[in-house]
Amino acid sequence: RFVRKEESGITRDYVNLPEPKNDAQQPERGTAADETGRKLFKLVAVSFGLLCVLQAALNISLRLALFTKARYTNLTAETIELRKELLPFDRYFQEGWVYIRPSFYYISSSKKSWQESRDDCRNRGADLVIINSENEQDFTRKFELQYTWIGLSTGEDNNTWIWVDGSPLSKSYWGPGEPNDYLGTTSKNERCVEIRFFEERDSWNDRNCNDQNQWICEMKIAL
Image (cartoon, rainbow, N blue to C red; front, top):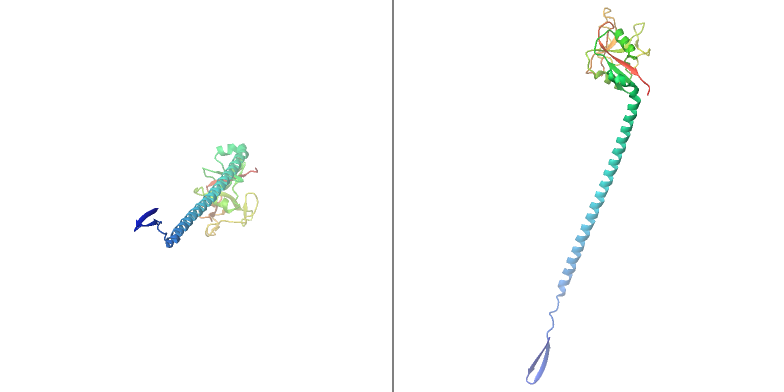
């Protein structure tokens, strides 16, 4: 703005100029702007990182869901197929047989001698159970009956243990101190085998074949 003053006949013009800017403050403004930019960059980077993590988690969840669905579908298909295969044997289920691949098992509710028990199994199209594996041994112990005949007895020489199918005993599960033929007394004549010690895997005991026990029949089927 111009201001005119007259003093002693002399006219002078003055111009009001704006205050000069303080150059020392300029770097502070620049620093604040840079700090704001860095914060914005960090925010964008963190947001992008979280987005990547969420995307990865979503991908994993989808894969697990697809895998579970596929596995369930396969199991369902296998179950349906097994039911179809077992349909001709439905009457055995109705009679109380239990199926554990590849055999049906029948657990008696009455007591008979070893030979009478075997005869009952044969009349049902089966025979006394032959235990070929630890899984089958564990299975036969789950019923926790009093005592149970299995398909094992001595051969004609009374010294060799033979299964009902004629095969010799290879893997045994004798209880502690068994077989003992009742501590060596011939009066007991313990030539047949029962499951006695249900709480132990090694549960077999030799016993007189004329004693009365429950029994387990086994019928193998080919599917």
